[in-house]
Image 1 (cartoon, rainbow, N blue to C red):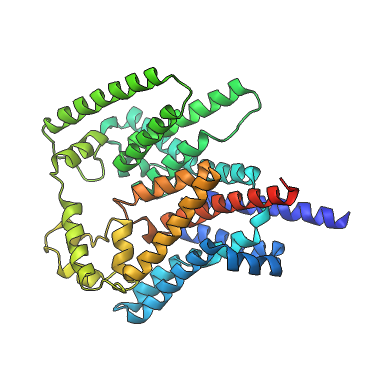
Image 2 (image 1 turned 180 degrees about the horizontal axis):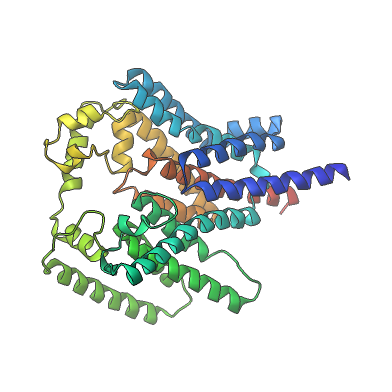
Amino acid sequence: MKAIFHQRNCDLILKFLLFITAFSIPFSFAFNSISLAILFLFSFVYFNKEEFSINMKTKKVYILYILFFIIQVLSIYYASNKDAAIKSVTRNTVFFILPITFINLKNKIDKNIIRIVYYGLLLAILSTLVSSYFNLFIQYLYENISIKTMVREKFIANGIYDIHVPYMALLNLFLIVITYKISFNKKESIDKRIKFSLMTFLSLALLQLSGVMSIVVLGLYFITLFINSKRSNKVKIFVVFLMSIVFIFSYLTLKNIDIQDRVRGSENLVYRAQNIIKSSDQVRNENWKSVMNVISNNLLLGVSADGGLELLQSQRQVLSESYINKHNAHNDYLEIILRYGLIGFSIYFLLVLMLMRKAFMTKNYYLIWVLVIFLISGLTESYLQRQIGIVFFVFFSLLFYTQSDSERFKINQKGI
């Protein structure tokens, strides 16, 4: 009886820690780091030496996370700025501690845990979105501000915590996708209303954030849902044709509208889309050229975890935005090759490949979409260079991978 009571208490603490860890992701570095450290230490309550050894030997994906971290640690030795390299590697410690954490928790991750983690992140995101809208409404009433300019940084700056817009858009998009599958109420009608309300609110917030890449992925997501729906093929063909016409019309319209200068940090979605279509914003293209130039001279091992800022700056025009703001690669794939060379990128590529294989083999909706969202979004941002992006990728990819592995293990145990 005592053993059962002790087990229930441990399981309850685990759920709380997972909830807090997810809740802390958008917040401060310290809050999130402490949550991760406590979760890591507590996971050893479930440690089983034999099972741990088997998982380390047979579940190669766990090894790849750790190996990717080891490559980063080794890169410190040839870094030109060792302080910057150590700081970067410290942020990436989750590549080491979370695989161990989830191996310990292998048989504890189920749909109920997924729901608890979802609620943690949802509460954190809703808290800042609701506070942002509330503060904007107050300013609109008493300060006569223009709502049209309250987008991106100016929108999110009214929230309860500070977060870089692309990361907020990434988390927002992720919640939309997860909300579709989460069950809120046993009554189907009530459940659908809750889902529709949440997905609508989060989608409107995504438009307010003006995250072009996130909105592109959201469009891809809705198209995928429609294609996989039970509607007739004729209806699907008609809708796809109609959407194609709308897309072409929107493209031509945006291309022929003059772009008006806007204050940085308040560029709305239309303005950003115009920049992409008309290629008038060359900041990323010029930045990528400087990155490619540095990569070409450091192809095998990369420049190290410090990011090679001095080398990048030497390839940029002094008055360019990339030079002034000391930009990183703004592309996850280029960033990894830049820092850790083809050796580091090969490990990351194999890691992603194995996750995708697991996702499609087990038809794990959550794992499929966390990978799709992160991999596509990574084309225009270096998400693995900030705490939020790193934890988002490592925590959720391992959570959903372990869920698939755990469910398969339970099925085998039952002899099915």
